[in-house]
Image (spheres, rainbow, N blue to C red):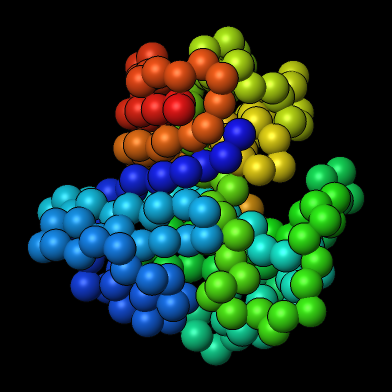
Length: 224
């Protein structure tokens, strides 16, 4: 499953432009007074203005599997990092992946993730062109198993990790994941930001084409 487009709400388009285009250097595809569309590798990243919006998102960018340290150095001093005491870089043995987390100006939690199972190592110096795609989007829910079952049955995607959890389950594959968490669960790493029901509109690749709304939740999924 690939995340082809991710559409999110934001209260500050000027700040979004300054961060995503001028700091992360993502190319702008479309820009209006109410919409900012950027290209993040293979994903169109869309921010839509909503006055007073206070929701917070967590999403991740895939990078080459051997460039986590280079990516961390690239953003060092340009962004606010999300860390644990004396720890900035993280490792998941279960996922065979390495991660670094940081914030955008409105408090969304972003992540660079290097998935070591993927054959995408490179010797090209890290830059904005190294971003492969948006590969994860967090979805909060009141009932994790129920939402996971709906996603799997409706979209025809598998559970990737923690199938029996009531608080956290990853759905999809290494190309694209829904990170389904219990509403109110604090986003890692110790961000003090609880997962909320923030509107998400996402287009993914898959075999069960259609437009779907996750029952009882502000999530629209289009599969093509």
